[in-house]
Image (cartoon, rainbow, N blue to C red; front, side):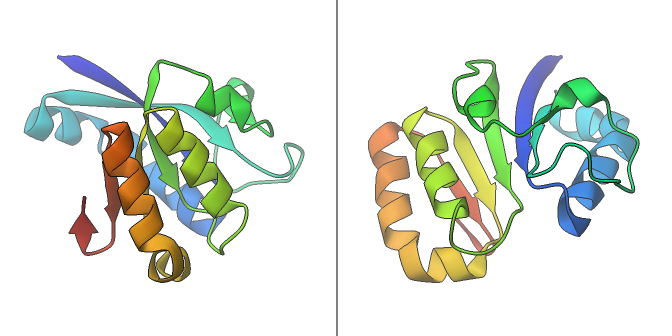
Amino acid sequence: MSNIKIAILGLGTVGTGVCKIININKEEILKRSGYEIEVTKVLVRNKNKKRNIDISEDLITTDPEEIFNNQEIKIVVELMGGIEPAKEYIIKALKNKKHVVTANKALISTYGDELLALAEEMGVMLYFEGSVA
C-alpha cells in the first residue's frame, strides 16, 4: 500500500464535500487504486470560521507556503474558484512539482494553455474537468 499526501485549497461547500468524500470512501479508494489518500493540509482564509466538518486543527492553515514547501504533499486540489488567488497558487504548486487538480472553469478557459505548458515544463500533471495534461 502506498500513501499519497494531498492538500486542498479551499474549505467552502465543495472543499468540505471533497474532504468528507475522501474520508468516507478511504477504504474503497485504497481497494480500487492501491493508494491511501491522506489530506495533509487544507488552506482557508479564516481559521476561526465555523465549518460544517469535523477536521483537525493541525490540518488547517492560512499560509499557502505550508503546502507549497512541503515535499511530502504530491497533489494539490484547488477548490477556491475564481481567478485570483487560485491562478497564483496553481502556478506555485506546479513550480514546486506538485500535480494539480481543479474544476475551475473560469481559470482554465482564460489561462489553461499557460498552466498546461508550465505543468509540462515542470514534469507534473494538471487535471481539470474533462481533460488531463
